[in-house]
Image (cartoon, rainbow, N blue to C red; front, side, top):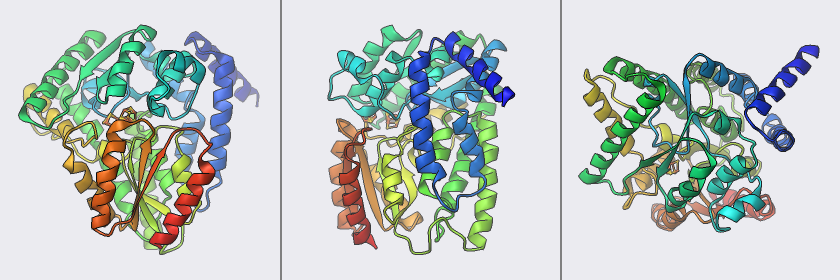
Length: 431
Ligand code: SF4
Ligand code: SF4
């Protein structure tokens, strides 16, 4: 107990040094802790390996931040990002650590709406809320923050974020999958490499880059393994827990994370062999598709999995869209390895691209692979790219007799009752 007290004292001074608003931060951690307990710890039949992720979550603003600050003290840099287009391979090769900064909860909304229009998506508003409310230690610990020109909302919001953070680096992202688009991405990734080198003082050579590629691919392979095991019926892990693993991948040390995911996969393989699941066999199976779900955006998965269905895959940047492709690390030269990185990221089928047929093909492929009975399309209100795509996606799926439920929501809890009714009706339909 005494040790615990001195540890929390130690964290408080760490948060204070980072400039956090301690009172507001206490309130956030309180809400997050309650939410986690109600949603995650109340689940039945969880794999034992989830203990690791429970621990990471309980220390997400504590031990992990201490580790990052220790890394900084040893000369490493921390780079924050809001998008899976920021290549972690380059960051690692430059002796820096990448952390995801997207946030999944409303905070300091009154302050946010002085800077952003009300009809901005919840993800962008949350980003600003965490900054203006001074409650995100990752953002405050970052030596560089990367803003990418993806959707209109983000690219314009970064203009307003610039004065609020030190060292905001803007990366342009193509909107069309053409040769010209690819060339733009290539130019941007070379600029980014230069910026990382300037930040860290480390020259990125082929060997360093190959090592970065190897580390990130190992993380992706572990997540592929986890995803593949979810094809089993009964499902060996809940969608909530699998989502948590994907969410933690944005914060955790990549190598330790990879080991933890592989360990849980060993356990899931045994469960599958014993026909042991989190839900009974023949439970209706759902793929979630759409906007990314950052911590603690667990509203929809929690409703789905308490309404008689199990989520067997996420077509999302916090999910398969973010990790499904590997980077070819076999080339010998720095140029060729950089090209392999460009090739890999250019395949990301984000809805900011026009047209974006690969995403629909991927949703259909996921339905087949994970033997899903239906798709729930998750769109954040005011997110034009995903909401616009939702209608043709729904039509195309229905033409193939794949039921689809389109949900437009935000981070608030006001619509939970209404969503529960709609989701329960959908689950009845796909049974
Ligand atoms: S949805 Fe698009 S903009 Fe958002 S994280 Fe994914 S790739 Fe980036
Ligand atoms: S959810 Fe949509 S609008 Fe919001 S940041 Fe992502 S792509 Fe942009």
